[in-house]
Image (cartoon, rainbow, N blue to C red):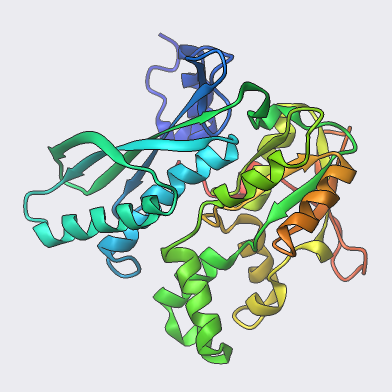
Amino acid sequence: MKNSHQLVKDIGEQGLLKKLQPFCPNEVIGDDGAVLTTHPDKDLVVTTDVLVDGVHFSDRTTTAFDVGWRAAAANLSDLAAMGAEPLAITVGLSLPGDVLVSWVEELYRGLTACLQQYDTPIVGGDICRSSVITVSITAFGQVLPDRVIRRSNARVGDAIVITGCHGFSRAGLELLLYPELGCQLSDRERKLLIKAHQQPQPRLDVLPYLWELNLSRPIAGMDSSDGLADAIAQICRCSGVGAEIERGYLTGVPLLSKLVPAEQMWSWILYGGEDFELVLCLASDTAKSLLTKLNGDAVIIGKIIPEPKIILQDKFNVYPSQILSLSKGFQHF
């Protein structure tokens, strides 16, 4: 066996995924969820996400309730990224025996509080003993076949639309770890950023507006849970295209600039992750129509280009152009 002594940390998260992808059907993997045809009129979407104590949450920044909320939100966000309506979830819970029962109950209260907004029940799962708390969610959704959102659907000339603000979750995390950072923030601003980290909202609310647009072709997109730059790079890689992004169109700058210097702020916006917003590639007219429907809760930040690179530009020439890549975002290994 070749490279039998190779370590996971030597090849990184993306390298490990490449090793594992041959074990799955090519037509199923590669997006935020797997699409399985189970009914002539609807496709089943299945997605799994794992949250691990010390990696995705800690008692310094996240209550048990918030761990549950975030676990549900992460999976519902993956369904939204596929264009799917949630049906149900199952919960796999691993934990040490000395965890308080009240902590576990609060975890499930957080799960339920997030899920109830979307009429999504918990329909089963598993519990086992472990040295570390791990919450593994499998979510099930359904979508019409012609409404499946895929990373591979981007076309040259498409407008790139993002919902919400990026960098807010990372800012909320930093405020929880270092409260002194927020000395220039109002109480409302501080709560807004902390809530973005502890209780993010999956953007299922965007889907009904998309379907009102009478789309003539499939949509490209994914969520930005691993960072905005990561999402754009993943879409471009899967679609065989590139992108031009205008720095001046990215939102949240006035608030984030109160916390950290410009270089750190842009790193949060581009690579901070866990904002659970949507990144969509649409025909220009369609994108403008969506912005009107979302009433200021989305912006066009750039366009898809044929050259396979992602260029971050600044029309005011304050910052030099730079190339965005997957390597600068969060990777597990």
